Image (cartoon, rainbow, N blue to C red):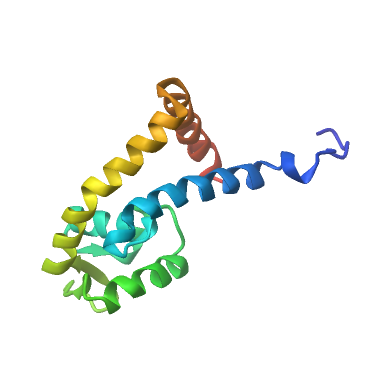
Length: 147
């Protein structure tokens, strides 16, 4: 910026624009997943836990790109509903979680609803914008990872 103050309106803020778009997209997924009672964040967590098998809290935080505090808060409803359970890791310092049979069953039931939401978002944006967005987000995450 060479010492010059950047003059932007709040609506031009990158964070504001990303969060606004995320809220709109999240609402679409929420509408589709409503019959399962899962929020999109819970669906994603349950999917990663089911796919990874017993997974440590640290590994899960890496997979979903969030801090442990936020992850623990988002895991709580899945634990309370019996969809995820603590798993024995052999190391008392390492907390691991696994999907229960009920969790795997609910995830399987939610998967086609998620796919419908994904298709709705892709259809609304079109294939070029979808591909461009995915590429831009991937590149952005790589560049922001070290900050």
